[in-house]
Image (cartoon, rainbow, N blue to C red; front, side):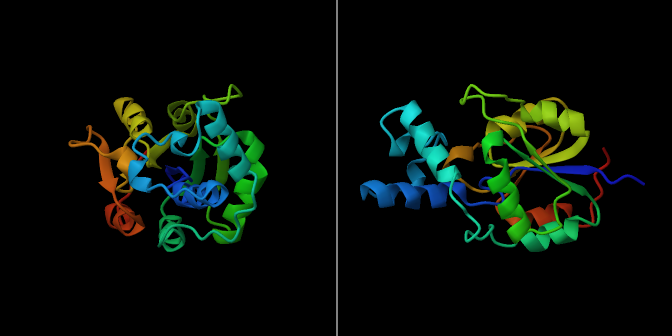
Length: 199
């Protein structure tokens, strides 16, 4: 029997992008900023304009991040869920960073992910597909993502979602139907372990 597809975001779900990016930027201009200020997840805190912000994000994304550990319990939880699901990474990272992304995944989560899909980012002007479109193509049974707009979009179209993390940029008084919150991988495990989501 075919396993249902669990679509998993990478940044802030597996990889601590904002925390690492903050260190990268604070080291450049020696001005410390709190992640609590990052309520829109646009990184303009560290740049004077959207273009400069994108340039900084790209400079950071070109680095070798293999020394950066995944979020706590991600590896163990994916290893458990792999028995029930086909695990597919669905990221809005640009395809330019595919080699770096795959290298990080293979270093820290070897053999756990069945596929990596670089959907692209609409802000770059390059090739882009929405996560809803990708989830539909995959026949995804569930999306795990830290961004409100992604989980809302897929849930409205009948794809259940887990809103990951308790971040300043993903606060919402009441979650929409079809969306559950998991603050960390331990909570994802409690939500999904033993549960079979049918696609």
